[in-house]
Image (tube, rainbow, N blue to C red; front, side, top):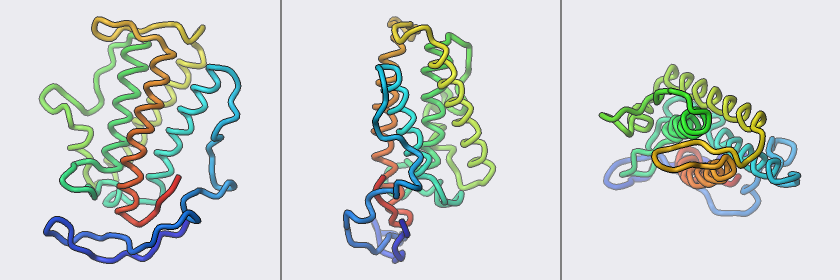
Length: 200
């Protein structure tokens, strides 16, 4: 998908780059030869949950592909502080929270967020190549841990403790699919505002 030309248009009293494009279904889908996702065809409950979660993770990667640090950090839907880089950092925190702390029971501190700054995953998403590299490294490490944990789990009924509640692995996987799907919707809008790229 080739992004359209970008034009400068005022937004909320400021000048911001917005793509000049017309909507069309023809550019809404990644070409099958370029799409790493399976998009269905999974076998069994575990295979289905793991497969759809993998596809959602890959979707976030695709939404961030080809962008530099400034673009990834751009908060392009004001007044929200959300950015693609912020989403990547946020999902690294979410993966870590559910799989390392809740399911594996590890004493794993948060990567960026603290009690003093619970939104540090978004607030610290600045246009610095080193910050981008750190975010990708952290996210991929958490995804790798999660995938290994799920693959080695005896069954989907094993539970982890969070607060006063037990959370079966099955429910955690469903929640993670939900979490990614929600934020990938945000990523759709963020990416379109950056360079006009739309679709899957």
